[in-house]
Image 1 (cartoon, rainbow, N blue to C red):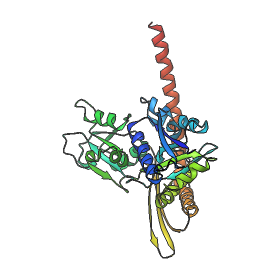
Image 2: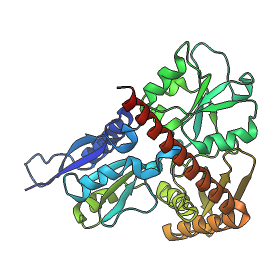
Image 3: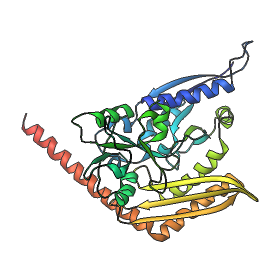
Length: 350
């Protein structure tokens, strides 16, 4: 009897759109058999994760990439679902035992974009008046942009894309502009809101930004075979190099690691150019390096990423990341103390 595969993701509008992109690709590759034969079928399931439920605290304080994946992985390992559809930038570089990345789909443009408040005529970050507030939930963006635009202020903004845009456009809202991943805007049909792109070297994007990944059980040979049909080799190699770099740096979505990668034809194979950077939260210290190397396999690309990370660590990135961890621990402790004080005061006022 043909198997039905359940594709699962977060319940946000963007996550559902991305899951339906994968669903459509699978249905095109494996259409229902006209004679009722053995073609697989596909269905979807959506759930809220810890990252969706906590919309009040900055990502920098509440944890790493597992915020977006842990509940989904429990469902996968317990065989309630068969494929997890992720924004690959949200996927930890080390997966739980029994889980693997089965596929990486062709990447959308990985750049970040500037989106200004409706009705304003600003076109670039340089155009924004001194003291303007720019919203972003990423300390990677804040750290890099503080270096280049010291006249601007940066403020955390959480919520799905439509919620963030509503906060931006609110007449009494604090934000003059937001920085958002272009890929999400494209997938939601909101690319008309893009004011301008912030391409490297102005802003190096997050590792694997713009790519979709499919996580499956390592013993699910049928799902693995289906995923092979969806993998885009160029994206796989570039993201493989980027993720290897991040894995060695031990960074997460709340660590200011930026990258850019390019894969082009060369005489002896394909030429991978990978740039990585690590920036202190205040923007005062910035470490950046680029490697260019011929690669013939995914393993070659992965080694380029690992080599780049080691060079960055030796050039000062390790101290930046150590200082960030100390700062985060201090802020988490302060936040917990404040929460405890608030709870005590609420009890006393009853």
